[in-house]
Image 1: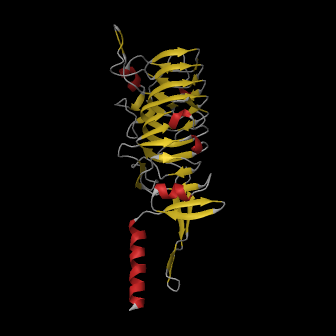
Image 2: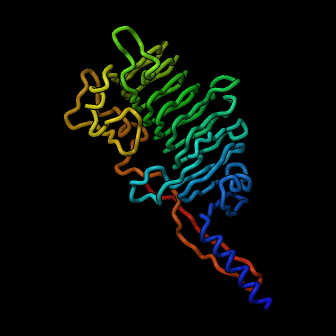
Image 3: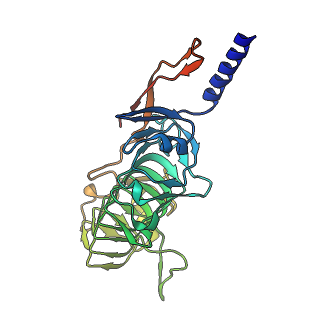
Length: 319
């Protein structure tokens, strides 16, 4: 009877693991698994890597430096293992100062906020979010890096930061920074009587001492002491979308094609160096994130000790 009960418990444990996606936490002193992202962050030590499978997860506060790798945010990418979504129910991920040095990549978020503007040296790669905000009680978040991010609305309030090969509806209040090979897609904010702020903001808005290089957008406004290098702003939404193969909305989306149209040309600028498919971090054809794949799964049932041993080896996908 005891053996029957034991096997029943073990069978139930196996069923639970089968139903819950396993999150792997790896580090010099860590080799653990979790079934929730919060549990994974709790188990992780500073600078450990958290490998996320596809699915929907919740995390309201990140308060330690970790490297979170998801499977991606584009469900149409054949080589990605589906999509990792975090806080898609409208909640905001708050990154505290204690999480400075974190790396987030290959996941979709609702909103991301740098609490009190203190978090620094955070890197985001291939992230999809509605808004990424660096402003808090202590001013703008500083020394952060954004690579191949897609922001449906605003990337705003950062200083001494780097933004590479990213698409956002608005780049706002990014000071003393470098914005390179980016696309700002907001629709026309200007009409004959002035700026219609109730409708939208310009693509690049209210910045000081920032270099904008090899980038494109619709409008700019209130750029103070900024340096523009090989940039182009159409001042007209129809002219803007005509430059690309398939852009129909000013809300960035993976369904749109930000390659320049074959007949696109820009007077006075070198279009071969512009946009997200050029520069230091060019988007790849059918780009997929640096995401984990299960290389080996040698998990087994230890009947004698009544334990389910999980031995999974994960490796990143190649680009």
